[in-house]
Length: 387
Image (cartoon, rainbow, N blue to C red; front, top):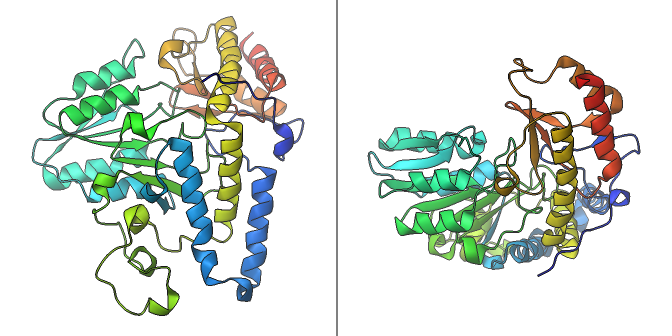
């Protein structure tokens, strides 16, 4: 399939002309359409007598179908959760770890996909095994080398949250299955901007925060659960994740069985009359643009940023080992022993260029609301601070 670059979509977002927001990995601006949908939900909550029983369920069914299309999964495999950490904790609750078995994670991995595994290892006598940052940037090779017969869980992202270091999840998934390890993915820093096919990767669990590359509202997230885990225990128990949970008159009749499929893993108060309409609107737009087209477009922008790095003798992850939508700039320690100079921070503030410092990486993460003018604004800041 040939992907086509997408023209700048700034008009679809509420971004002032003088703001250069290159920080999607932090929080994405909401689409205007998503904001309008959320306002409609706010109006609905202001008039609760207009809320009917189907309003608790039908919008979520639409969201499940759209999210499933995004990752080539089945809607029955999708749960609605408030955060990626909630989804990962759901996975951890159902995994049995024997003493000395290990959980594979990455050095400096985002904590939401670390703390719960550290606790599981403590409770069971297992080991949290941290794959060190490879000098050549090849995370895939490094992770594959650490998966062995003692591996019980592989808990990794699609790309590193600090600098975009990429992992080949298809190969890692194959290696995990070969030793019967559970593959748990946190795709918060990739899904929506980088294509992912569940049928090829075959994770056991996949969690994704909705407010970054999914462009959705904060507090509305997604959990994919492989059919082999549909019989697992949910993190919480509520009336709606049990059988007949969509039948209000029968809620008082306590049930013996959970809802079918991944719905049993839904969080309580999942209806989200304000957040759900915004998420539905965002998913519709992502599907319309096409994730492959988004990825191609953002890869072109990060390629320009990579050239800036070369101009100012800053280092980046090697292109072969970096996600196309994501880039981090590192300052050589020989010239900048204390990291980026303070003058750069002031230049960014003055020019209203928004990026993030994560670890020792200056993280630059554009989206479709950006164009070359935003890249040149970043260059102006580097000129001012570094020359």
